[in-house]
Image 1 (tube, rainbow, N blue to C red):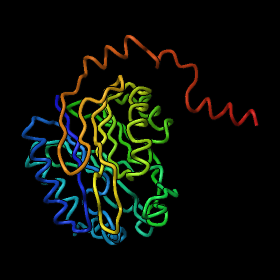
Image 2 (cartoon, one colour):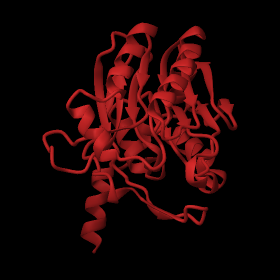
Image 3 (cartoon, rainbow, N blue to C red):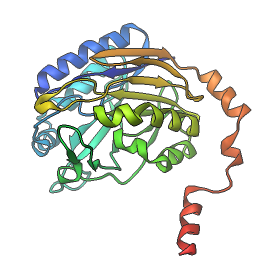
Length: 283
């Protein structure tokens, strides 16, 4: 089974971003990919009104969800739709979530993951600081879903810094983990590949890390280096900067062998929940 990660340099023009993404997804399909991951904010990045986008999509008047469904159906491709601003389920008056959607090859949305960890941090780049919580609501649940390639755990960007989430995905049976991102150039140079390889090694999963990679409006720069990383932490394929499509065969047999040779999940002596209880008791 072949998988793909898509790297983009998205801007504020949704129509242009979708046209660019279509070309890259066509390349993924032509290269035999069954599953492709788009980056965070693939359809719109910059000075955008996320609440307005979410409201239009909720009324089925927005362009993004219909485009994802049509593209998946026409290309016969499972697509992780990066992130799309969507209203929290059952909360029409709340701030939108940064939602990663999985569409199957029939164009049906089969999973939705709302970003758990919002990026509120001072970075020191040209933008200086980021505060996603001003515009977004945080999610409540982790998601693992069956795909033709394997059991997929879903994460987004800043989630990468929280290994407990990745451990929970592995405990739920994840074999692959998607990481659509818009990592800054500054933090990416320091931490992107280190974190990706660590999460892959810890979980013994294939990581599909799809990043934004270039200069955007208002001087924002993203790191790129979208990559496919195996359960041993080996970078199988990578794209340094600019828009492009990276594909690689999923080494599922080798992953199973790694898990058998080094059965770390059998050796665990506590769960995340048990560790949390022990910490509370110590206090």
